Each structure stands twice: as structure tokens, then as C-alpha cells.
Image (cartoon, rainbow, N blue to C red; front, side, top):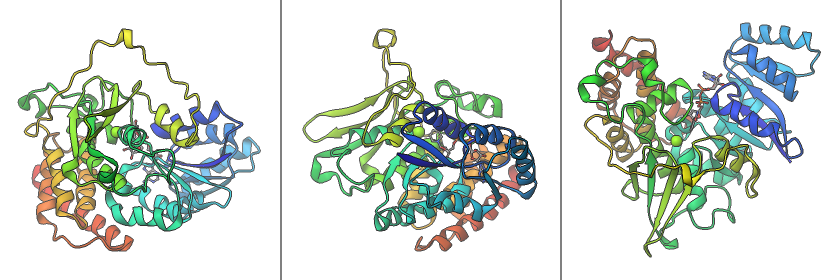
Length: 399
Ligand code: NAD
Ligand code: MG
């Protein structure tokens, strides 16, 4: 039985997790739910799943939630703030944590859950991008299982050798097992065919209208700039212990092949499916078994062909910036992520132009004096400092 904490239960991944859990009450129970401010939805989720603990971002939100739960006479304890998120992720009754908070806010509770030896279902890619080696060491030291939920990494996990016999994602070097490279597929996002001129004036609504996936606003913008794929290259590097030259990005507009692994003997193993996050979520929850995810079967007769293209680095410079940050090493992936979060928030608030997102990130990487990422504290400080630099870099660009 998996006893689950969902960090970010009101988001796109959180809601899909509960959709899978709902169908398998014999296998899964919900012990803790967390959300930032959406009290209304969290109260409904508490009513349905009756967790021990529910966590929100602020005292005001906690009061509002308590008031709603009182009318339902639920025993769920309500708490708020950063320490309460850690409490939820490390509850003794929890053995599985879905890390589905968006951005840097998810880092500390996720790493604490890893230290506490919980099974980590990792959707929150920013947490791994920021803390890379430290996160993977925490997993190794505690013996925790780490299962990637990001669809591409989940696909790669399924295509790599011995995926079902070892301990989560901490399987070390694949070269000895005949892997020659990872082919990380990307849809290309909503602007795959948009000209550079037209990219100057795209709006948040256009950027958030992804052709294949329904997702939260931040990751939707990241998909539109292709920073999402950049973050995923870094994510793959840490998860699978592969250097960047072994990770190739391939545009595949249909989002049917979720990623592939190429072997030295000429074989390529791919994972295919509907673009529906319930598949990787169900895989992570049930691993090493398989359960019905409530996803429509892939109908090959209705597929209009699978096509592939190279990524255009001129229109999508964020991808190259991510490779650059990874190669610079130390805290630079943290800096990349922090600058991107600042720039995306400003874009969503209509204060920054779409094409300036990459300029803010590039400028911040240039201004930051790099150093090794040798502790969680160092990483959190670099995140803080990079946000200040990004705000400064943005000043001349604001609309
Ligand atoms: P979302 O915006 O829909 O949901 C985010 C969740 O995090 C919400 O529950 C929100 O309440 C919570 N949250 C936001 N800010 C917070 C804060 N400061 N403190 C505490 N909680 C906070 O996002 P999403 O699309 O569900 O994505 C979640 C994560 O999963 C992201 O890291 C994203 O990159 C990753 N991911 C998402 C998808 C997808 O299909 N949506 C696919 C792959 C990976
Ligand atoms: Mg992905």
C-alpha cells in the first residue's frame, strides 16, 4: 500500500495524481495534501481523501481552510508555511511523496523527503536542476526510491536496462550496459513554426496554449521558450548520470514518442503513449507493477505519422543557455533556474516581452560569479542572489 503526500495537490500534476489514486483505493491512501493558495479546491480534496494533514502557504489561507473543514467535521490538521511543507513530506505515515510544487519552492520539502527515505515521484524538475548532486546523494544515502514523473524521463527510465530490478533512478553509469545516447523528445511548443519577428509580440495566453499538453502556466511558458527542454536536459544528466554529449534533443511535434534510448548494437528503444500525465504518474505510483491509469489506448490507425526535426537554437536560445549552465557546473544550473523563474513571472504579468526571457537568463548567467554547489545552503543562497541579479538585469527591458 502506498501512503501518499501530494506536494502541490491543486496543480495540474497534483489533480492528475488524485485522479489516478481515486481509481485504486485498495492500493493508495492520501495522508497529506499541500497547496499554495487555492483553499476552495484543497477543501474539496480534503473532503474526498481525508488526509491527516493539509498545508497552505499563509496564515490567512490556513484560517480559511480551517473554517471550511470545520463545516465538514473533518479530522484533518491544518498548517501553513515552509516548515509545514517539510512536515507533510516527512510524516511517519507517508511512504510516497509526489513532488509536484512548481519551481524552487518545492526544493526543500522534496530533499527532506529524500533524506527521510520516502519514495519520491519527481515532477518538480526545478528542484533537481537546482540541487543536482546533493539531491542524488540524499537519495543514495537514505536508500530512497526515485521515480521520474516528467514524461520524457519516465519514458527513458522505462527504456533503460534493468529499470525494474534496481533501486529507483540511482543506477549509475549506463555505458557498460550498451547505452550510447538518450534521445529526449520535445513537441517544439506552441511557437514551433512561429517566425522570429512574430515571437516579439506573443502574449501569455498564446504562450500558455500548448498544442498537446494541458499544464500549469509556468511550465507552459517554459515549453514555449524551450527552457523546459533545457531544464529536462539537466534533469536527465543528474537522474541518469550521463554527460551532456550523450543527451540529444529531438523535436517530435506529435508527442507520441515520449523519449528513446539508443544502444551500441543499433537498437533504439522508445516509450509511446497518449500525451497524458496520468501514464507516468500511475507508473511511478505502482512501480514495479503496472495499473490502469485511466488513459485512452493509443490508436495507431488514427496516427497521422510521426515526424522529427532539429531544434532551432536561433529562435529558442534558452535550450543552449541550459547546456551552457550545465557545462559551467557548480551553482550555475540553480542560477539559470532562478533567473528563468523571475523572467517567466514578469512575462506572465505582462511586464516583460517573450524574447527577453532568454536575455534575462543570459545576462544573469554572465553577471553571476560561479562557485561549487557543495551544500543546500550554498544553493539556496545562489538562488536568492541570482533572483536579485535577474531583477536588475530586467530593469532596462521592462515594458
Ligand atoms: P501548477 O502551476 O498547475 O501547480 C503547481 C502547484 O504548486 C499548485 O498546487 C500550487 O498550489 C503549488 N505551489 C505553487 N507555488 C507554491 C509555493 N510557493 N509554495 C508551495 N506550493 C506552491 O504546475 P504543474 O503544471 O502541476 O507543474 C508542477 C511541477 O511539475 C512543475 O515543476 C513542472 O515543471 C512539473 N511538470 C509538470 C507537467 C505537467 O504536465 N503539468 C509535466 C512534467 C513536469
Ligand atoms: Mg517533460
